Image (cartoon, rainbow, N blue to C red; front, side):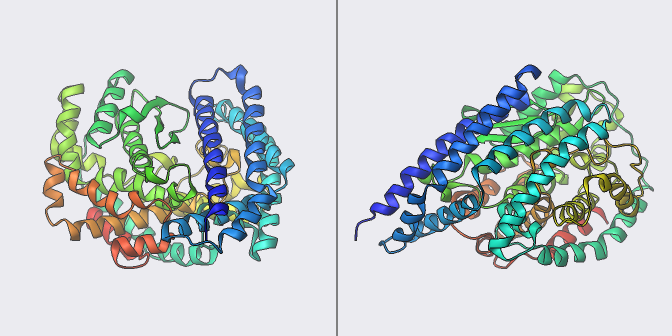
Length: 494
């Protein structure tokens, strides 16, 4: 039997991929280069593109081709691609065109206003836009939930993390909540015995940028297929052939921009190493947001904050900024591994980081399921920050509930990916260590080739060929096991 239905589908998804490419680059430009006056027109253009993609994907012929292609003689790769095509179609077919357009417009408006509202601590202005985003997200969630037979929040979670549920998250995060507060207290108490010297600025932005570019080069970023820029919130965007990463700089703070670059380079290496032979097809895309976050946290935390990597980084810091007491090796490593609960998630150490994520998960789930309203967010945020990290955000919206960009465009269901990603990263690094017995020595010598080959073989080259659980089991020999995360934090910090 020929594969004419399957081939019709591959042509359709190739076309969708090209529109996604344009959308990704237009979005990158909006976040980095676009003058403020372009906001409304860009929002409308992106909404138009979203509607066009939605129309192509939900054309009734796509549904017919999907059904007919099930009967065709497809090989294992084609079957996996058909599975992913079906998932994309089913996700899109549930949503009316008008909702897709309204969400795109509301998201663009909310994000653009957030850029000035956050520095101004303007919760009233921000919440007015957020209410519209939440209203539309609830509409989407209820449509999805009715078909899937699950809670509204689980219906949105499935977009980012297929097969994950809030019941499973509660189990995983409940386990973390049972030991993390004690580990955090003990790590802080242990480090209180150390007398650490803080790096003394200023650290010129241009020199920080050069350092970031050097780190990207060392970590294998392909500059022929990507670039580094500045945005209000660090991100990795673009497409595998043209990956755009961003960071933000503070001339009084040396390392937040650098580790932002290292984090985004982890995302970028994954994108740049996705299977090009299947380019334009769903199977060539990253497996899930948690697997994507596992790669960025693998680079930033598992590798980047390790003694071996910091030993390698220290001479480059001295070369660019000159010697000072803070850059003595012992102090430099300890400074970069300090555990200090703070307000800002993206600057958080890896011990307190899960607190930021679980807090957001609990709030956004209650928001989407209708248990709370937008007005309730600041008080809940403050309450949870006090419980987890002993910090008050009362009246401090910009460093509290307005600090992240994810909710502005309706990205509800995304936040759990960060702590799931940290768990996957710890498990993957453990497996890499078992497979590569001299890994730590190689890292200290600046040789990451074997490590990156291992990631390429076990994660990057597979795209969406396997389910998340199958991918992790193939790579590590077992299903997701949160114990590796606990062991990693205990070993490094206690």
